[in-house]
Amino acid sequence: MGINAARPWSALSPKTGETTVAKSGSVAGAELRINGVSKSFGEQPVLHELNLTIQEGQFVAVVGRSGCGKSTLLRLLAGLELPTAGGITIDGEVVNGLRESTTVMFQDSRLIPWKTVIDNVGLGLKGDWRPRAEAALRQVGLDNRKHTWPNTLSGGQKQRVALARALVRKPKLLLLDEPLSALDALTKLEMQQLLASLWGTQRFTTLLVTHDVNEAVRLADRILLIDRGRVALDVVNDIARPRQVMDTAFGKLEKRVLERIFEEQSD
Amino acid sequence: MNTSKAPANPNIQSVQSIQTNINFDKSPHPESTLANHIHPPHTRRSASWWRKGGNAFIPWLLPILLLAAWQAASAANMLSSQLLPAPSTVLHTLWTLTLSGELAHHMSVSLTRALVGFVIGGGIGFLFGVLSGSFDWFYRLFDTSIQMIRNIPHLALVPLVIIWLGIDEGAKIFLVALGVMFPIYVNTYHGIRSVDQGVVEMAKVYGLRSASLFRHVILPGALPSIFVGLRYALGVMWLTLIVAETIATDAGVGYLAMNAREFMQTDVIILSIVLYAAFGKAADVIAKLLERRALRWNAAHTS
Image (cartoon, rainbow over all chains, first blue to last red):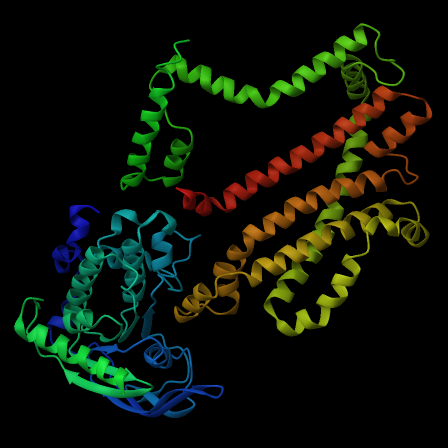
């Protein structure tokens, strides 16, 4: 990757002019309320009477072991699944299907291989979307690849295109389903910085599902640990940004969450 | 040729071209760098000319040798000109039939039958494939019946088709359509069923619904499989046409051959066979070109 690609956020606001809304202090994110939500697939219960409120613009990380129900929670919020009991509201509206202001990024980038990068970003947009798609690609540092096929991109570049696709719609809620877990360590770091900076300027409410506690502590305001369909830990992370792994507070919080995960396992 | 040095250079070249492939940020056409990858560019012009010319020539070497041997054997009277005329005789026949306009007439009649049958059969097969792939109830309702009919060799229907439809164009077109329909149906259905469900889900998240979802995601995703069906169907199309044209008829390449048999004109028979081969090859080349154009995103995948 080139030099400009490594620090795409450095050239963010002056070119795009996208960040003015967030700077003026108005809230761009959605407020979520999860009221007594249960979900089971057939006989198999996955989530048990979950109650959560997530404030506007909050960056929440959901951690937990495989199969704990964290991805199901994300799919419920996306409207891809409906709860068996209870309800979810976003800004007071009941979620009963897909919403335009909610976008999702998956672990696999799910780019359409027969559409060029820019056509992937503009997927489903109406009207004069090209300038917007180009601006979104510039945000992730990939505007120089807009006419290439996704198959020629690296894993990290694909995820950046997927991020641009999620952001071009100005989402109020961004759902991230382990989007970085398939990337190599360096690319992952770059993507974490990119996510943190874009969230910092645009303040969409973000829910990040991950099994990487380090990533959760690095990015989120609040960390939820889910175990066997229940919230086992709900902790605020107020470590000052930009966060350093070497920081003692960082290490302490990471240790606390990890210990809790292993404690649950030994029960 | 100094064999010790010449092969070493292309290897170095290909390594360099792989490296440029990785960093082709500035390249507007990644597929062109792919072509470079497969056929590394050479700086030594004369060597590359020889290699290129040689590579293009090698596949034709055997057919040309065979033709030459055939011609030589005929000239030496080792082959009966009654049973197997020399290539030059066939070529001469091609020339006279072209001049008389007979050839153009028979070829256009055959092509029309093939095309009309293909469009009807392919259209029905595609439509049923799309519906079966998209709607479970349609699949459940029709697939078993379609599979049963598919397993009847359609050429076994020739006697029945003659009784039903007579010996007119209708019978020939019907047979072609029937033969073409099933490969297109089966491959369209499988293509649609094998579209990546993750991508479909993603497209739904980004607001694509029924018609736009089909146009932008499902149909392009099914295209590789549809093209497999298309090329297979083209083969079936020519095969069916050859058989159908031996049914009593008064025009077409098949008529040309059957009529020639009556008069022992083996040169015309061989010409007809060559024409069928040329038709088949031309259809396959066109299908391949269409496929390469439609699936150019897929070519980039191999880099």
